[in-house]
Length: 308
Image (cartoon, rainbow, N blue to C red; front, side, top):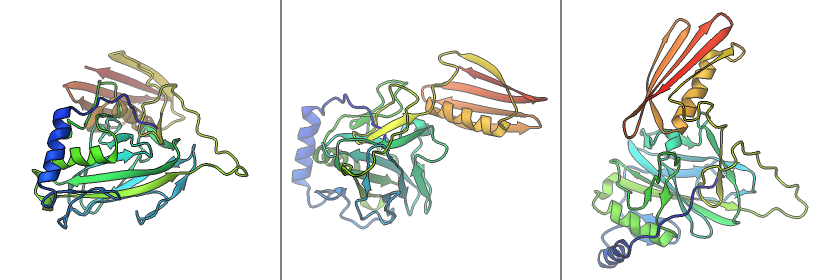
């Protein structure tokens, strides 16, 4: 998979001390640590979150992946919930997979539905990379949004994945215990899936990783590297336009440009189709807006983008 960014800041002594104190004083009453599950809700929860990989639907096995192979992560909930996905690699590096700005920050999942990350519309893929060994994927689901600002944050508007300020499953469990402790135990749940980054046997043919189109892709977990689609053609321009022919259907072109804008953190707020024209509007955290217009004229398609 693609690698998430590191260069994280350590937790402050205050947060670590408070975490240790809370866990020691209320261990029996609140979430407990588990070498297998990282963080566990001791109370059965109707939220019932599940997480698994594309090679193990049950979520109970530890499938092998070789460097260069792609992986997808699946999650489902029994109640409408906000889902947070963390990856802990064999060296204890922690990365926040969801929410991320490739999905416009969205991590809300409807009850009894399954979401895959990345899906066919996302402008990136997860590719397996070293280090070798077992990775843990933690899914934490809550019926209300959780404030994880002290655990992970986006360092800049260009960051598509958040930087995580805790490392190792112990620190992650302690920090998340603080986050979920004020929340009613019947409104959150957690689950863990595992996958193993295996070394190729000498007789095996090496797996050729997909050639990255950008030279400095954003990083997810140490064992996950992110391959991103080509850089957006408009660069930093506020207004941009181009013309193409109709070999690619206008609807397909529109979907491609929507994905590119979502990769920049924009959220699609509305699309209007009328005859030979498609117009879409977007918003962005911090007040940014964008308007995308595609219009077919004969055998040409005119594309216009304005970002405000």
